[in-house]
Image (cartoon, rainbow, N blue to C red; front, side):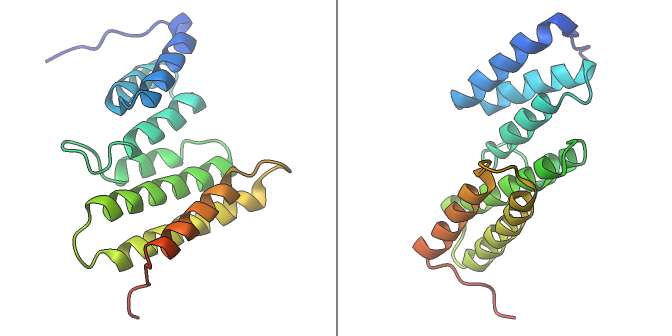
Length: 157
């Protein structure tokens, strides 16, 4: 029905900056659209892939939003093992937070499992990080605090 207008190669950097700004302004759908335009001409643009993963996860729980399979499919396109592990953790953590906010009664064990999965991914990322690169450690601590604060328990085995 529509043929999208292609972005110029010279427009990639300004478009990336705009996508980042839109994400920070809580407009993840608009950031997603820009990232798709960038990836249409530069399929392996790592910054666009990361922004797209983040934009998609920011739409969890929204009407017309996405499920976690969409951002998970993008992980294999990330070049570094660290990034694949770190952003896999982000996907799990954000899905858990969405369920914690909008979940139904009894969803606590599922949220617990998602947070523990995120923590496992963050531990993998941390093992590959450079000295002083503590993002994964900080995210791990956040997940642990969410579990403790909300008194989450694992599902019965």
